[in-house]
Length: 411
Length: 149
Image: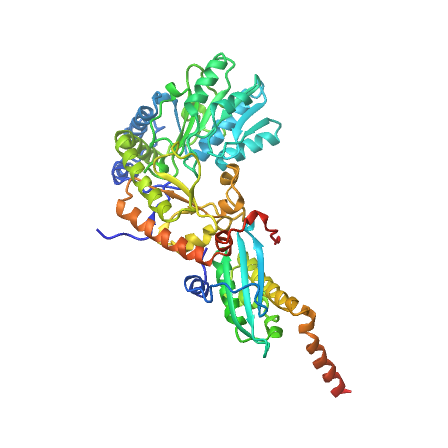
């Protein structure tokens, strides 16, 4: 089999649609085009049936009931609805929110907005392994805490936060009535790892279809209905769809796709995890054995099986991406971002800017092959070597010079 | 980031990568930038003591594709130039030659700085200043003025 270039190793950004998902969606574009809210004809009923079936498929994957699934346009909307919705609904009860500095922008920005409006926010900082522990949340939680929002797995590192432990801790520490609402942005987690919102004590959970081989533009927010019943102030007002929490005609086609994507993910999860972990180990070992200065960022084992974030010190990330243009990856380098700032996630781990500048995220996925991994290892090793030969910093390190002892000019 | 063909060419086939002996009196070394900013350039020149012409130039750069291309191009341009002419190389010339996009202009500024630092280092070793390079310019101007008078 020949390789198709560039090789796609950016599955944390988005995934290709599984052809089985597309097949399920097709009729809903044309024949079954009805509005799921049309209650009085067959077209509407067909749409509603599709949506209801998808709700069951989601519920089966995350261990909730179908009524607890609120369809959205994706995780950014789900996070906004969860965070702003809780703040508005429970703001009278308390004024304190807990989150972490290395959350996705879709969490950071809504929380920052609330902070401007007067909420008191605790920004937890991870350890060097990137993980937010239940202990850290417990130390920050107060009687006036209304919301704890911590992502399940980090999008840049793949590191896994202690979500079940946090859920359990909150339940033990507070009565049902006084417990802060616990939201998790599970965009990178759901569909890849086993999820059970009952067992894990999660009240609100955000997910997106396109991260799990479904279509873009559709996602959901799980909203707990009992023990406790979570209420949210909607962002979108209109026809009162989705129990009044999210008005707007449902994206029936996308929702059907998301449902199937969830069903496939649930069925194939165990095998897929093992396969991805094996390939990621092959990738990491292949690179690290030949480039001993390379480092894997974040916790060594508590990571999503398909994700690895590797820094190549003394080599700049953008130039490396340019060198390995046959491989589609993502970098924490400033040069690849609009802001010219290196990744705030890597900086949150306490890594120097130069480490952040030199990081590459490899995101493996369902259709990644061993052949592609071997090609990637070869390309990365060859080009990092080439860039090291070109790097004045590497030369200094080889000569035994401590780079921190040098007074660098600013520019 | 879409780069020009020239940037890609310099990046893929960098000219004059290497290291010269910093202690050699004929060598001038300029190191500019900082690791936390994502660019460090080291540019070195070797000057023929008889003729005062730059015989060889080498670089090593930690940085993005444009930073590597800017320093590679600088070494090409330096070879065969007098110190005076080397000091005339402007970052805008590099921007133009490599068709650098606006966000990458700082790479060309860094390359110009590296050239200046290398010249300064060489001149310092010989008890001279950068100004001494342009004494001649004034003489020419004066001569010109005299002729006009």
